[in-house]
Length: 489
Image (cartoon, rainbow, N blue to C red; front, side, top):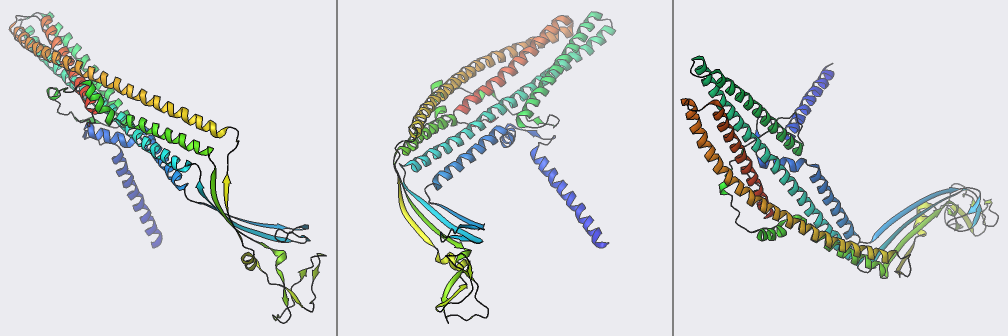
């Protein structure tokens, strides 16, 4: 009973322990609901969970396996074989090549080795090919990470932008609610008409709708960020609003200078160059099949047959307590039990002795000269040449696409900077106009309609400024990214 209770206790403790371990793993994989994540945390989490990045990482591992295999092709190949057979009736003894009518147990052991000496430098060029292919796959992995970083940064800045719009909408609602409360008291005192209260009440309702719309936009942007991070929609997530200063961001380089830096830093450019080199070595490796191949071959073989176990021994050489085992007459195929004057046949030539005595070795050079093989070798060369030309075209397309992206990003950033400066001046003017209108409305010199128009104009100007600010910040960061600078907020 004590043993049973002890086993149950151990099982319960183990179950609780494993449950705690699973909880720790779950907490490590999903963000805590009470912690605000910065951009770096979001990027790090996305890089460790994104499927495209994981697929690219496995492509790197596959390329590494191909490279390792190509290097091992320089080593000799070694293969062994073993066989065991059982036959009965009249048949051919596989060891003595004589026909016999009895049960035969036979076995064969062999080992063969081959060392390539010359094969048209095919192995050397294949190693160079897979080395550049491996380097290209690592650059493709870096490209996948860069694409993910840009996407996460864009989604992150959208969340920050929508949070600011929610704050603006909430401030507008609070401001209009205060005006409604003051107007309600004035209407009750008979200082203002009832229509003024109704107009402000409608404005408050409109601001409430605007706040709800902005909160929905914020929720949608958070959902898209969660989807990019592979976080369930039900999992809480909040982001930390960084301290951003658009005035400190200056475009101090031309588009050509940025493109020259991008051509040196972007992994897709290096990947395209490696793929050109890989296809170049593939052409050389394919041409190696047109040359003669020389290899050194060696073999080791031995065998055993049950019919050879009976062996002749001269008289008085051995003493036996039992009668000698019968041997088979090679002419009649019948067993013989009698001694002859010269000696006896004894069943002592067992498996180990035959394997040792029947060893034979081979060593030779093999020269293979390709003469005609259905045009496969030359067709392989031509296909590799075409693939090399395609790799060069792909490299040109990638460079052209990069130039277009840099030029577009430069124009977008320059336009966003101008838009931000204009929106900043507009907010300054709208803020002063709203302040004056609020004073006039409080003094009774302006009606509720004029007040609503001024308030809406200020809110729209603030919205445009927020959009222009974050749009300029992100596009400036994209330009920095093309220059090899990390994206940080």
